[in-house]
Length: 165
Image (cartoon, rainbow, N blue to C red; front, side):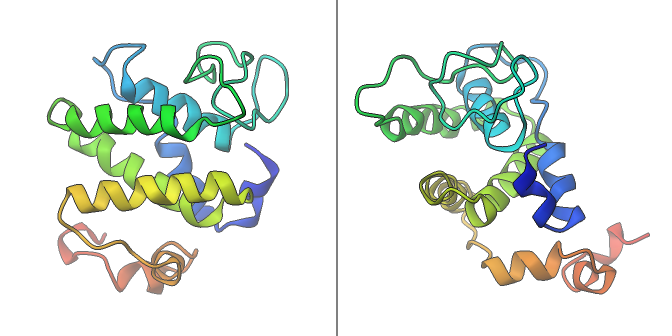
């Protein structure tokens, strides 16, 4: 994992890891996989070259952390990545709900914790889109930190009794 992830609570690191592998049964080059490639670049060090890949278009990374979009002019990648988000939201009926929740929570963490402001803004925008699509309200960063701040008490405040062991 990238060095910045060591600065966030272990519970948040774990949430990032739960979204690394995508759902089975979706096209390898569809919107889900393109979002995941960019997500992985924001969390992992590229195994093929040992580097942090700082944008979704760098040609390095193999297929697991490979590029999500083609050649970019003037580093304007947000629009092209937004089209993957549009398609992802249109295809949610075919995505396992369990995976969607893992991705939503991991995207929230990137949207609040990623060290690069531009990348952080892009992921936060996606987080808001995902919760709005579910007719929910976004959690604040302090609510996130309370729920996933390595404190059982903080987590229990929002846990459903049916899932508490």
